[in-house]
Amino acid sequence: MTMEEALAELGVRDDLLSDEERAFLDKSGYLPMKGLLSDAQVQALKARFDELVALEGEDGGKEVHQEAGANRLANLANKGVVFEICFTHPRVLTAMRHVLGPNFRLSSLNGRAALPGQGLQKLHADWGKGVEPGDYYVCNSIWLLSDFTEENGATRVVPGSHNSRQHPRDALEDPEAPHPDQVLLTAPAGTVVIFNSHTWHGGTLNQSDQARYGLHSYFCRRDQKQQTDQKALIGPETYNRLSEAARTILDI
Image (cartoon, rainbow, N blue to C red; front, side):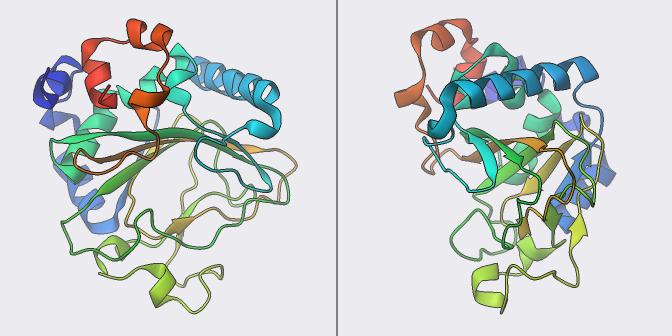
């Protein structure tokens, strides 16, 4: 199955994004989509997240990244049918196609729950250097399983930085410090925020008494290396369950 056929089968259509949404994503480098998950879906994803944290313990997230002060999970495409929506939702895939073009694939599906008093990250981009405007390699989506608030450390972004041709590592004296142009991605649980991964971003400090839950469904151009080698890590049960279109998105 070709990627075009897979996207069509999964319901991807140009009209799933409005002209205003496309323009905002192009200009700002991010796009909030409220209400993509129902309350029941949020609770199911959160329950499976907690179950995996308990099961994996100190090994949680080791396939990709572990982080002090956060519960990290990785390889979630292979850890439950509940996560399948994160790489098959037609609105999200339509946005990915808009940013990356038609030939892309899932790079990784990870989870991050910033713990109370933790979670502050430097402003960073998910690519090693600045790029020319329009020449994008990676695009992410944050699936909010908690309300993201100023108090609990919502992700910050610097609008338009994806088109600066600069990487924050080279441009900023202190990437951990607040940026004068930063915007906090505050939104209710169930929102999915698309963000061009060349946009400067980072978690802020969780000053609440509860963990802040999010999933990161991260895509790359098809000619780029996946963060998680889906073909190597996918189990037979998952492979057999997935549709051909979903397998094409994972490139397995």
